[in-house]
Length: 204
Image (cartoon, one colour):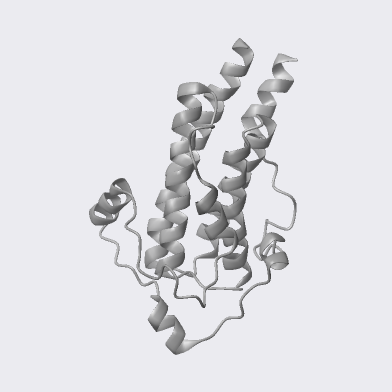
């Protein structure tokens, strides 16, 4: 049991560090929506959270991270662009992960935090749909970071996007299937377990 608590503690620390990096990358993407390196960074972080969640049998956290991966795969492959609506959804995914991590830190469980609607929205996201087109305000912390950084968003809103291009709605099967990696260095599987797995090996 004590060993499990140590794994949970390490997991919480790594998740928060990763989510902080995602916040930074999302702010940067507002200024440079086509920055593949930033998209790949976010994908790697979500992949790591998903892998470590599976190792610790934290199903909700892993499922939400996977939903984020689904969005990132579509962005990385060029299946859809980074718009303000997508950015807002990713911010809410990060906020959902933070709520799960807070519960896990307090109770070692994730039973009380509800994220199923957020998961469904990400998995079934349709760039052509106007449902939910009114932006949901991002977290206060991220809004403050934007203001401090002086970033000006260059993301398309949904009206701009409709005026310039059209996108095919991904099928349910394709939305759940990982898109092929599009960046150098991502043509091999990303090892998810980093220091958590190393602890297991070191402790025997």
